[in-house]
Image (cartoon, rainbow, N blue to C red; front, top):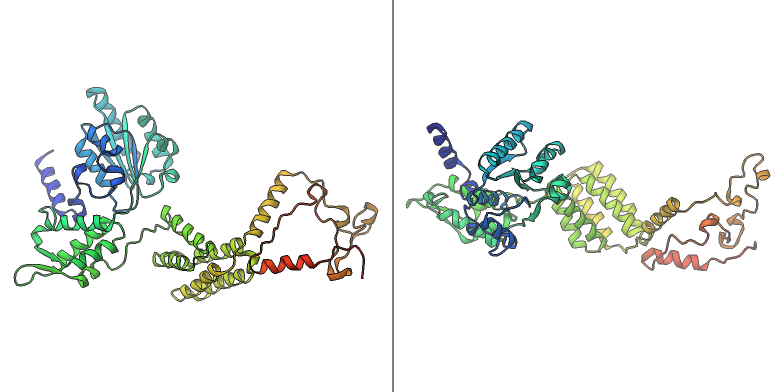
Length: 442
């Protein structure tokens, strides 16, 4: 490294964001994630012993994935190389493999490769790494915000241990901010006094993302003028300005998207009106497409409410059409009305179960044909084929009902739609019980 490179690196380190400057260098300095890096845990022991196998860190932004990779870099005696999957291409991957081969062949030294945002690599790029992970040329350390079981090559996942990082606790984030305020690498030179309620607010609103909290406290430092004594005082109002919107973990193309929509649907199904409205608000706040939400409400109204309250589907469809017509932000009111109704309505999945069971029989049971008496008899020669003979017209019988076989012979007696005692389905069941099974006309 020449003198200009050294100067450049020192300048970049000085000008780096607070979150980067405050990254721990040892495993003991890591805050939070006790479930995987607590003293005595597997990852803690592996890092301390420098006996790391291929691993993938999976978790929301700001929870310490890159931090743990840097701790590994500072601890290991292996060569440590890094790629960012958002910018690295085939050329960069091949160069890393070449270096790893040379290091192993000439010096017998292992290479740890850290791939940030590994889910951004396409299948071909991931496949390029696979043989070198398999033969030990590379030890892979991947980091991703997406579920690796969905987004990372199955062969790489099977050869790696997955460590899931969780949102940091408020106490952890507050500890990190206090450390930054007192550290020479952090904000010590700014001589800041931050009100306890301001720290509590930032720790809460950061939503488990340490980076968001540190960025906010750094912004407060840079935008707050010192008073006569040279102190920069940060109160709750300043903190609120520096982090104006709660950093919700809701990537509309990612894993958390599916978790929230799953919780939304299950809350409506479970008749928890308050949870359902909360998850609705969370999706709207994060910018989810209102049409996507409306479609989920319509599906839930049919699948989980069904004929226990047929009005639920009517309201859900009307809401979907109204949101398309009205747009946002007023559309939130329409969606809330539909969600609240579907959540509160009596529930029955009988219609859903009925069609799925019928589809299974269509797939699995060989049926020779429609019963002859039900076949079309509106054309010349139909009766010569036996079609329509013996059919009983329901409206000619008491209560417009007559008992006859409608299912094919192979499925006679099957019951697909099993009415429940929920809501309007109970009335339907009672009505069917009143029908007189008779073959005689009035």
